[in-house]
Image 1 (tube, rainbow, N blue to C red):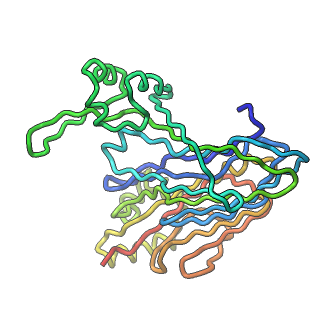
Image 2 (cartoon, helix red, strand yellow; image 1 turned 135 degrees about the horizontal axis):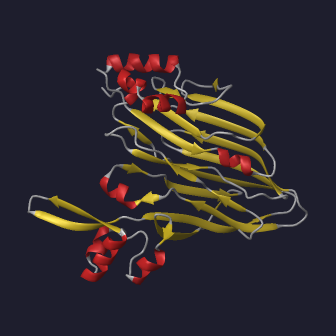
Image 3 (cartoon, rainbow, N blue to C red; image 1 turned 60 degrees about the horizontal axis):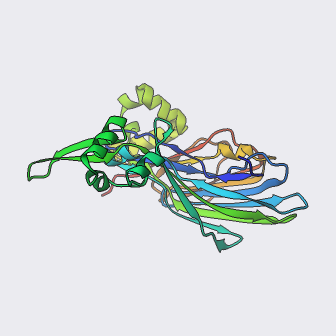
Length: 319
């Protein structure tokens, strides 16, 4: 980028945990391209299955105003996965700068195997967020072109009135919200945003099954969420009471982007809320302190995060 700095909300995809899982797509924190002027004085992050809130305090240490584009790329939407599977995406983003709502513009682009196909779709009168009905309405030659290029897939089903054949989008939609922001010289700027996370999970946690725990995927899951012996023992107790099936929720948040600032984050505070006292929670962190029946706190100073945050919450089976 040519600009002095850019703020990016980075996202990564979280894979489905089991056949009955909902795939969750996680959003992350603000990133600053290397700058000699802007520091992140603090980051206050709250994470739960219902809401993610974060408050940043930036300081422009130069003697001049720095103006740049602030951008929030949303998680990539795999349109084929979205049509044929249960997929959860972060939604209802709200952003404040110094307490005032931000008016944002949006750019949507379509990619297939890393190639930008937005212009091609535009030639056919399609937008990157087009639904299957728009593809079905195209002339036969245009539909054939989309299928040949791999930009469309065929969905055949019997709805009770005979078999029908429809086209569905097969590209990846990349959506970016953005605005112009001035960082005043020599003073702090507060940026806040909140959203409903794209919480993935399953009606039955795989970790409740001994066979899954012993599998390579199970071991990766245990490592990813730092599920220790106490957590697994608690999960076993819940599973015995529920006949072996306990729901789980998975929340992801990209923390490592906070290492890209000019200096370490001055003060970082994380609060994870597991939702209810009877729920179990596990995530990787040293020095976590329980501050309420449902909340856990982590505080760091002059910190550069070296791993992302992955939270697993296990719920007692509903009565």
